[in-house]
Image (cartoon, rainbow, N blue to C red; front, side, top):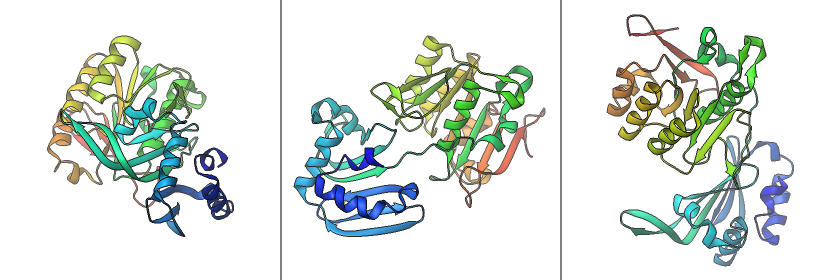
Length: 306
């Protein structure tokens, strides 16, 4: 936890340390809002620290997370987040500066959300038997689906690690993986180095759209598997089809809670109706990283419940 606390002014470091030290393993978020109380999230519990952060402290925090060079972090600030050493992420909001319909800066920053990164090594173990194509030493094209916050990103990170390194229990040899880390949440690069273990044969491109990143990986790095998080726009469909038609396999995630709900989303419906996905996995809303429903694409191009 030391590498998170050090991004706060001394006074706030002391306040936070006293509140966090007993349950630091459960800490998920530190919410900082200008002229408002600090809120800590521990799993499902919140603790409100009745200390109002002032504008000077907000600017001090920004300087610290930008290593005293705000200009060099301007692109990340414009994207609404900064990745810290250790893979932790700081969400940033304020007054957006728009130019040519793009955010080029965020002024008068008023809120930070420090999201604590934790890998869950082995969390995909129970799903691997459904995803691995052992006969061809590859994976099945898979879409993992759940509402936000139920472990999709954590799962694909662990699957990437295992597929990349190899899995002895299945006699699965490690293969080359390419990750499009659009919002730096899967590998969490910090100065070019993944802060999460995504495997020895994995290449990562970040801060780029899936439509661009997938094509770059296919053309430049020859991955056997492409992984990306939260597909959901038309450009994503074209990029996924490009990758899969280029001989790659794909592992992607999307927001939703049931097959019926997915079919109400015209973009995801279009993607699923192409039958490029051989597995659809819906996560259990009552338990993170656990599957509730798994559908297989059968020989008749229909999805059957497993």
